[in-house]
Image (cartoon, rainbow over all chains, first blue to last red; front, side, top):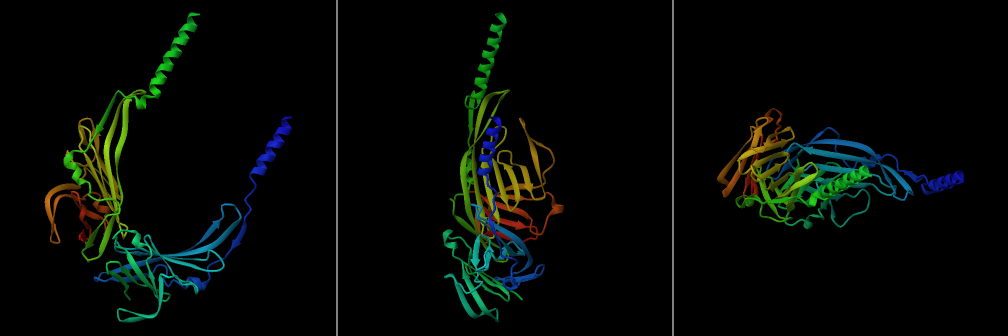
Length: 190
Length: 226
């Protein structure tokens, strides 16, 4: 009788905990075309000038890491890569974070973070309503081509808070200008 | 028969003790509530969650500090003899936190004091923290990225464990960029100097009801209320 109970109990136990065997989809390494969306080179220094004159040095830390997104129901597991770039200033203002990833086969994700403000850049043909494209933009006597302006869609949730209004970006130089809601600006300084 | 009676008496006694001890938390002989001294309440910033104030630095870069935490309640503690709670205490407490759009955190809290100590004002700005006893006019603790120092609390008051070289000065008024601020607490950081970096905060100025009005970095750059 004891043996029978043990067998029945073991059967229930084993049946109740089926091994997780998801369908694994590996999207592989980020393609070069995706990495080229961000021009910053690991270890290099970039400069931005505040509209009142201070020039701030930013040091780039760029690295690629593997990432796994698994479904809770154990149906699938997506494996992909995230390439992150952190630009750390030598003055207490924004740290810039840029992230490129390939979470599925249909598109590349590309986001810029300035603290809690995020901006999504187009990595294909899709455009959001917060994004404007310019053939060229004049910044400090120099023309930059194929420029995107991304507006901050979140700041109106914060009462009268000073925050980022918009940023200008192109794939050749990266962040060109950051406009604050009070009119102050951080501009690329070559 | 006699030993059985003795045993049941002991058991009964143990049960009674256990019963009293188990509900000791709620049946203290004495309850005491400590409130802020009235003149110290003004150190609490007159603002509500979501309010913000602007500060600008020596290079005219502006930042906004927004309040994201404003909570007040009574903290609770108890003391006793062995398993018996003889005293339950409640201390009035108020905590406020502001974070700037560039991620600099400023917080302030006030805790009611009980004798022989006074109300405790705790101020933190970008990892430079200090506690100031408003009755004894002394810094009771500093806590920074480079280390911490504190005074030992005894029944008779504070005892120096190791000296704290930082100072606090109470100033009647202070002019900043043409505006006059009253009732200022000026904290001057002067510990762990050998570890300081260019952007270690060395001076903090806090005004009653307004909060942070000015601070200074080790490299001389100042940030002041706009």
